[in-house]
Amino acid sequence: MEKKSFRARMQAFGGFLTAMVIPNMGAFIAWGFITALFIDTGWMPNKNFSQLVGPMSTYMLPLLIAFMGGKLVHGDRGGVAGAIGTIGLIIGAEIPMFLGAMVMGPLSAWVIKKFDGFIDDKVPTGFEMIISNFSLGIIGLLLCLCSYSFIGPAILQANHFLTVVIQAIVKTGALPLVAVLNEPAKVLFLNNVIDQGIYYPLGMQQALSAGKSVYFMLASNPGAGLGLLLAYSFFGKGQAKRTAPGAIIIHFLGGIHEIYFPYVLMKPITILGMIAGSASGIVTFSLFNAGLVAGPSPGSIFSYLALTPKGNFVGVIAGVLVATGVSFLVNSFLLKTSKATDDEQLEEAMESSKAMKQEGKDILEGAEKTAIKEVKSVVFACDAGLGSSAMGASNFRKRIQKEGLDITVENYAIEKVPADTDIMVVHENLFDRAKTAKPGIQIVTIKNFLKDPNIEELFEELVKNQK
Image (tube, one colour):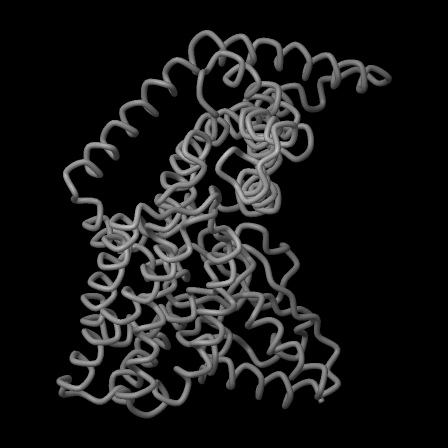
């Protein structure tokens, strides 16, 4: 149970990092396009426009991250505190402070939140605004000075150490071995801890000097997942084989990698094929010296091609194809030599899911029928509230509307699910995190995002009890 709690805490940490970065991905992509187009080695070199690259990465992007991180902790007031605290890091550093913004933004907001809590109900009537504004200004001043003098240098040292370690791995040729960490982390929904916490900040720093970075592709390559789903399409059995072709479109074109996670969890040995495919892709990227100009979010082949700089298309496409081919060959062998059928293993996974639902007082097993009758809102929740949850909510909403039920269906990141939500639908591996973050909401766990028996049970109960 402690392992699950630790995993849930790590997922929540990754979700928080994601919540800081994902809303700003449009800005990162805009910066990537400007870099790809206008630097000296870009598609349309332009001396004037290329001057935008440095200031955007030095000031705009870290401040956006810091504001969003602060806002997550303490609303707009926390966002402003986060930006003030982070500007001290930026001015005192020689590198873009992406990692620093992820630390200083939430930390500054936490400080102002604690202050606000301390003076709550102690402010004289009529002095609320002046105390609110001046307290933020004074505390912001102290945070800015502290980050410039003490926190900034500490983060620079930590960043330097991390960079040296990664560069040492690159020089030894051992970079493909990160796939051993990446692939298991992804299927446990810990990929955002790695991507948003390590690879993307390092990638931005490298892209600023080199115009591209392989770090953006270490965990986001869609090739390995495509190979797995192709293997299931040809050599899988039962429901897994039937749903895999549809999952390919969502994964490879839509960039929602969560769609293939259940296929790995259904047959854990396929993680070997995923590691082999991902490692082969990294080797290929390295051989071609390929990179992207920004983090591909979502990890779609379209995002990859759009963010590929001039002269790198062969290497990027080759890396995706090699990862696909190796993953397909290894996973095909594993599926063909497997003794148990996919349907048998899927049934066992369903039973395990039901046991987890029962423990969490899931509405389908433990709640009163009267609760179903009163349902007015259903929320599909995932790590970032965008990929898999958006897809699940869209499909379920159409079915609800077709039946004429007065129920709203939305999608959110787990930590942002509204408190008045009646039912929250999450992947079973996110159950512990959802239960911890939103203990008062009834939870339905699922295993397959395309077609899941628990979703069918929920839909039938809603129709039966509300029509």
